[in-house]
Length: 85
Image (cartoon, rainbow, N blue to C red):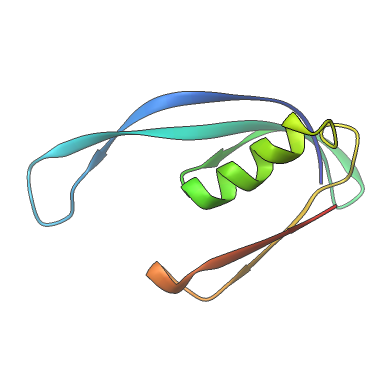
């Protein structure tokens, strides 16, 4: 996928099994190309580890110039994201 700008937002999430909420930061990335086709949509990232990896690519100047590929493996708390460009 090809991405453009990114930003961070605070979002309220409900804590499962309770009536409480907590505030977390999510990374929002504007996607402009996906699977070789032009698109204009946003991608919301709640995973701190994935957001840190992608922000690092922006900080290094790799993004938004490079094509980004994210592969997800596993599920739940064992979920792992592999980022390549």
